[in-house]
Image (cartoon, rainbow, N blue to C red; front, side):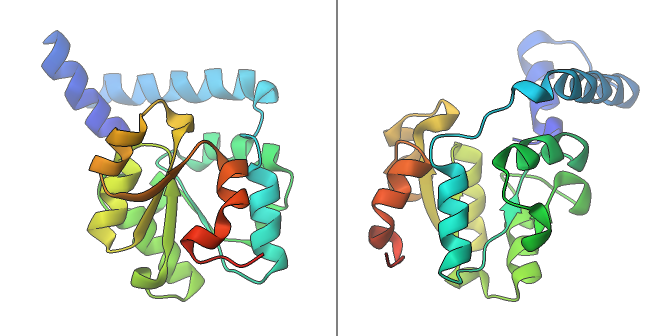
Length: 177
């Protein structure tokens, strides 16, 4: 979910108005805390292996995140796979973040593929809603705190425990081992 949607929810739930200045201050505090704790980031089980497998078999992939590059770069570095070999699309590169499809459309464009031929892997209902809106195939992961039914209701065609589980079942979403 984008920071803008999150602040809208805060306003609705708390009644506290989040001004542009307060919103920017909160974003900066979040980025500072994320950088300070970034050394503790660990990839999800199988995440690095899944991305390496995709690269080895020649399947183009990108990372598209609602995070800004200032924080996303830490998570990408933790994967240990060399971010220069694939496109990274972040919130600061598009007009709207998830659940709008902008991130995924920009990723498909960067890969030079039609979005209808893409598989979007995500762990939130916002990822699945954006995949559906982009007209991509959505595959859910249970690592984001959302349940199997929530991800399916939001549009996931399949749901796996984590990237390692997805890699074990890659043939179910069109991959070949």
